[in-house]
Every structure is written in C-alpha cells, then in structure tokens.
Amino acid sequence: MHRPRASHSATALASGEVLLAAGENSSSNGGYVGSAELYNPSTGKFVTTGSLNTPRFLHTAHLLATGQVLIVAGNHFGSIASAELYDPSTGTFSTTASLNTPRQGHVSALLLNGRVFAAGGYESQTRAWLASAELYH
Image 1 (cartoon, one colour):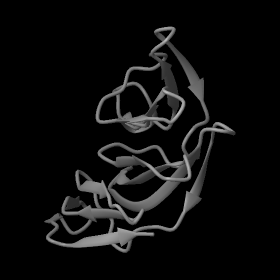
Image 2 (cartoon, rainbow, N blue to C red; image 1 turned 120 degrees about the vertical axis):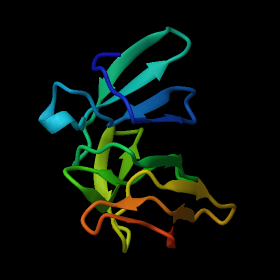
Image 3 (spheres, helix red, strand yellow; image 1 turned 30 degrees about the vertical axis):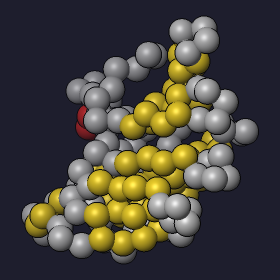
Image 4 (tube, rainbow, N blue to C red; image 1 turned 180 degrees about the horizontal axis):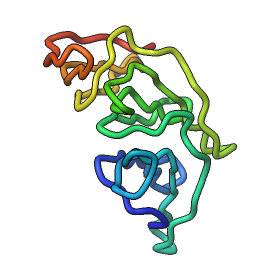
C-alpha cells in the first residue's frame, strides 16, 4: 500500500479491484487517514484514488447495486454520523445523508432490498455503547 493503515475498510468492486478506504495510523491528521487506494489482484499493485471528505476509522463499507461504495460513520476526533459514497467510475467520494446517531465500531449489513442496516457501536460524546439500529436508503 502507499500508506500504512489499520481499522480501515476493504470492499471488492465489480471491476475485481479492492477499495481500501480510510483507517488510522500514527503519522497522519491525529492518526486518522482520509486517503483511499485500489488494489488490483491481476497486477498485485496498489494505486491511489480520491480521498474521503472526512478522515475516519472504525467505519463500515458496502458495495451498493449502483456500483458505488457506501462508507458509514466511524471515528474522527469522536464518533461521527456522516456517510460518503465512492464512485469507481470517477474515483471520487461525495457526502450523502448522515445517520441519526453517531457511531463507531458498529456492524452493518447490506440487505436484499438495497438498504444498509447499521447497529450497535459506541458513541464517544456520551461515552455510551449503543443498543440502537437504523437503516440507510
């Protein structure tokens, strides 16, 4: 990879490439990484792609039916509720609707109806473990 990262996401794209997004390391922006890379398994090489609008880690990511990747919540100097979409055709990230509750370390799943279910996690402002869930559509 071009940049060391941990607590990032890895999402297989329709092209066969893998999007590695965000994460944390000790040498950047308070430890939060806003960059992204594509791994091509055919060549074994990594190339950089667009950067996220908000550096984050402990987030989740899902390939949507549109071919875009939804990046959900995570941590950036505290739990965040924001979400972003990665468009592989342009290599760019754009902001999209936020969750109602900031969360990090949560789980999420892409449902058969195309919605993304996000549940649990931790909200650092209130220092509370979450027993809530919500749907992104």
